[in-house]
Amino acid sequence: MHDGLAASALEIWRGDRCLATDLSFAASPGSIIRIAGHNGSGKTTLLRALCGLTLTESGKIHWRNQDIFENLDAYHAALAWQGHRDGLKPELDVRENLAVSCGVRGISSDNVDQALGDSGLLDLADLPARSLSAGQKRRVALTRVFMSGLPLWILDEPFANLDQQGQAWGIEKMRGHAAAGGICILSTHLSFDETDVVTVQMGT
Image 1 (cartoon, rainbow, N blue to C red):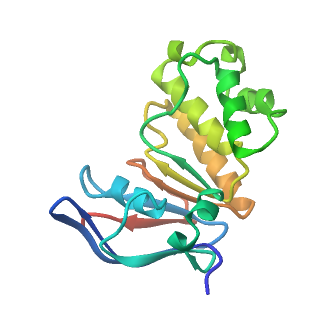
Image 2 (image 1 turned 135 degrees about the horizontal axis):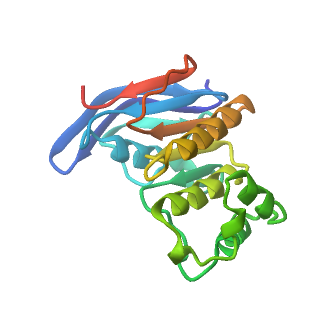
């Protein structure tokens, strides 16, 4: 029995290339899992499989002791996924983008300005997303995850386009999420020196 996310004996392919066989790991509440590997090693493919967005060749993924495909809607309701694309609506301003996300999730948008202040974006709140730099867009996208209140975060290269200050902010948020009992699974080329981060190596 496992009260977090557990992957067992996964076999993952992309096209006709096998990326992983017999891959197993578990992410308990309070944990940070780093998916590492060179470009093309299958990090994104694995993360998409963990989200239930693609199928594995074999193996099982369980969330709180239930196969994710037995109730995929319920699983997705517990999951905040951030891929390579920031997913912002370019015609909406920063504040509106976050408010829309809150509405989709069914959570209050009352804390949007507080979240923007925390992310260093409050001065940009009224600017359309299309006018932001790549790093600013990534901050908005991550802020959307960080204010979601969801227990499981799965993030694909979340530090892309962020400067050192932005990276430190993101790491601090992930640490706080884990400290509160959440789970964070991410791919990144950054090296983590924290002893409480577990690394799953792809492409070995």
